[in-house]
Length: 107
Picture (cartoon, one colour):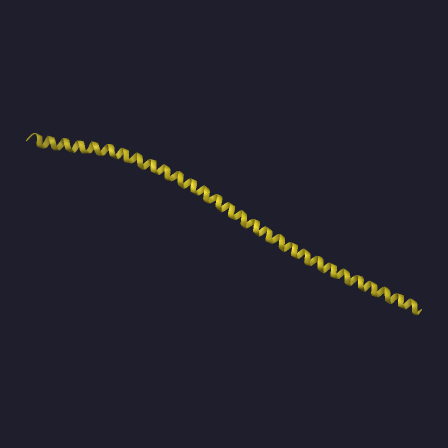
């Protein structure tokens, strides 16, 4: 009987040891999962930041293209207006000279 009692106590101790070990393993698994989750979160944040930077660079490059295109277009318009203006200036000078010559040429 004493032997049976010792066997029961040994079995209970072994069961307790198994439960303790299982609890330690469960805590380790939870800790590892939390660490892995944090790592995944940090990777996602890093990728998001890299994607954000890439999008900003692409937008800036596109904006520069648009600005250059608009600048070229406006420079061409200014050139054209100057050409038109130069032609009209010559005509205006000729007209003024003609009037002066007519006014003073007849005297």
